[in-house]
Image (cartoon, rainbow, N blue to C red; front, top):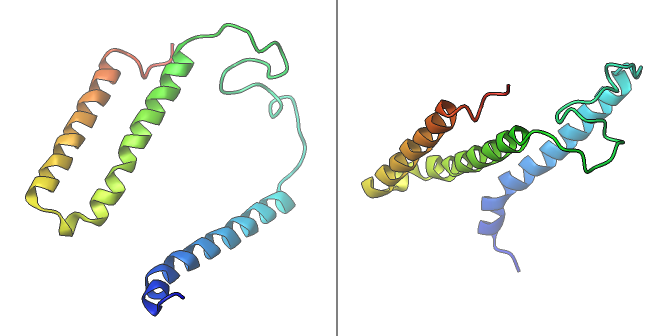
Length: 123
């Protein structure tokens, strides 16, 4: 059913997945066992959006919170395009290389623009 080539190519990925699952279970288990479980006022306080999570969900709050979150998602997804490019860099033609350089230049221009208009500052 499966050829040996299939196992040769995907065995390292399968091993990586198994090791990462086992390692995450070990780390989570050890942190749960050794962490001091004493909730106080500071640990139970509100964070991120600044509202009590048990109040009415229709409270108004600053749009900057959404803007920072959207900018983070946009730049994070654009950076994800770099991983396949780096992996296949030795197999690309010069056109593929320069297209990605153009993409990186546009990414930097967008970042500088967001920085200059103050979208990354939290007042």
